[in-house]
Image 1 (cartoon, rainbow, N blue to C red):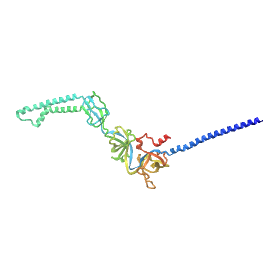
Image 2 (image 1 turned 60 degrees about the vertical axis):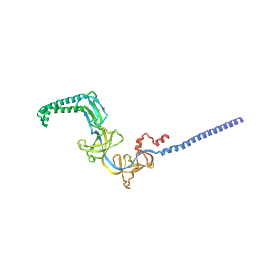
Image 3 (image 1 turned 45 degrees about the vertical axis):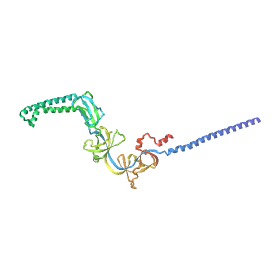
Image 4 (image 1 turned 90 degrees about the vertical axis):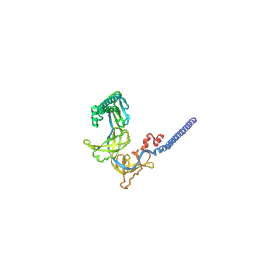
Length: 397
């Protein structure tokens, strides 16, 4: 009996010890879990707080005051005013070729030289014939003049010279000399060699074309304009030209002429545009052309791509103290590049001032009063690979 009680007491004691150990383990585990939870809870706000205040990168342009130029949009083709197709005035075999296709040449620069011997011989032969005829001319009147002491009159000398053949021989000599001068073919204009089909040793015939010289400094753009728009176009007006060779850039030119004929099928007229001093233009190119149709002076303007709508009302984002703040506007006319801002219908005040920074990129999903980091279009073009501080901050996190 006593042994049974002792055994039960021992089992009860062991159970209490195990229960106590288990409780300590659970408390320890719970303590570690609580510490971890507290650590996560304390880190989460600290980690999320900077992200909530990240300034968004945007691109801005300044609002400006000036003339709003309304334009007629069309297309045109580039032509050369001076495109010379070279040919030889004389026949001969090619002795030397001094240029190639693509060469830049100046007016009077030698391009091709023909074999000279045949031309030299022709000049010497013509000179000998003239000397012979001159001798015959003198012999026709000198002996008689020595006897009589009276020389022929001017008319008589002219008749005797013609009869002797000296006058014809003199013309043949001039022709031989002229042909020899044409045996070296020179460029008639400044420009570039566009085509050159000639090699040393070839026989070149008189009148045979062999090269084309283009003066790229004398180019014109012929733009087609609907007949309804022709009365809006004025000579001397501004023209903005865009070509594939200069992507992202507009060339500034002038309307040089409005041609009188109208195509009866297309119902279009032609307008001549010139862009002086622009080396990127080449004959045969096509161009997108914006022709000045009307000029509205003294307007406050914002970039057309900056204008968006929220709740059915047009607005722009204006950067003030590092934040993009939307500003409702009353837009007027636009030429696709600039949009005029009209006075508010209630207050009569234009809500945009000259020099305000207007966001043109990064504003489509921007919220009012969001923190922004502003760069200009020029800064973005000059450093396209530059990382914004916001992107650096995201990478570090």
